[in-house]
Each structure stands twice: as structure tokens, then as C-alpha cells.
Length: 208
Image 1 (cartoon, helix red, strand yellow):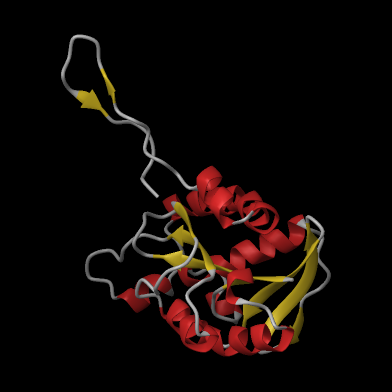
Image 2: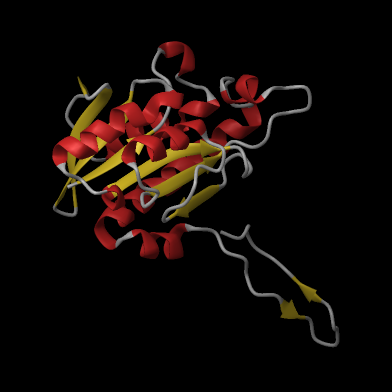
């Protein structure tokens, strides 16, 4: 039994904001897997699916972002689910909009939703699926940035990132986070020396 949690804020006023990319991915995953209707329990919207024969709860905490752990902590405890059976999808300002990263475990990286989960779960051994939203523009506060909709030029990048991550999240469940990281995290391509030149040119994506 596993939990895939997407972080965000409840309410229509937040639905298309950068902070809600976790909700966006969970909603897309629910459609992809023909999940039953969402129900409220454990201060969350929850639906249950099967991925590769595994029972999986899809969870959108309704406690608001900064208190996400208040929903997830009790749910893990009630179902006796270990932290390493939890996958958390969330926004990340430290990577460009539309960039994706999968991590096996770690600290909060300054993300208040992850801070809350760490405090209430009592372990950092849960996988994170991070969707980049980029840094705030000049003159913007962090709060203004994360609670604003995506710029028009970033909307398609986020949609592409979510579509890319749907099979990646399923891979975490069926094959483990290590394989998913290796398969879906972007990697730098090895530099190649041009013939007759001592300079190597690097191509490809950003390192994981």
C-alpha cells in the first residue's frame, strides 16, 4: 500500500497557481487511471487506484500547503504505511519552470509543505517529484510568485512536465524510485571533443 500525495491549496482561487502543480498532477493521474470520485477523509481529498497490482491512495491535502503534514502524518500512521511508501509531488522554485526532478529523500529545500510533512511524518525517507516553477521576477515576493498563475509562456511547459511525469510516478510504484530517477531525471550528456580541437562542448539537459 502506497500514498502519492500532490501538494497545493484548496479552493478555486488557487487552482491554477504555481503552488498547485502537485494537485494538477494528481488530478491528471486520477484521470489517466480512471480513478473513482474524490472523497474527503484525513483532511484530504482521496481516491484509491491500482498501479501494477499495488493499492495506491492518491491524496490532495486540504489543510493548505504549509500544513500538509497534518493530513499525511495521521494517514500514514492509521494505515501503518512507512515513509518510504510515500511519494510527494510539489512545486520547486529552485529549478526553471517545467523542469522536473525526482529525489529519493532529503530535507525540505526551504519548501514549507515539505517542512510540515517532515515534522509530522518524522522521517525524510519519502520520494519527492519536483516540478520547477522558477524564481520570482524582480520585485516580486515569494508569496506573490507561488500564488500567481503561470506566465503564458510557461503554461505549455508545465503541461508537458506533468504529462512526462505521469508514467514516472507509476514507475516509482512499480519499479522503485532508483529506477525512476535513472529513467526520468534529466542528465548531462558527456562532453565530446571535436576532432582537431582541445575544447569539449557540452550538450543536453540539466543535471539531476
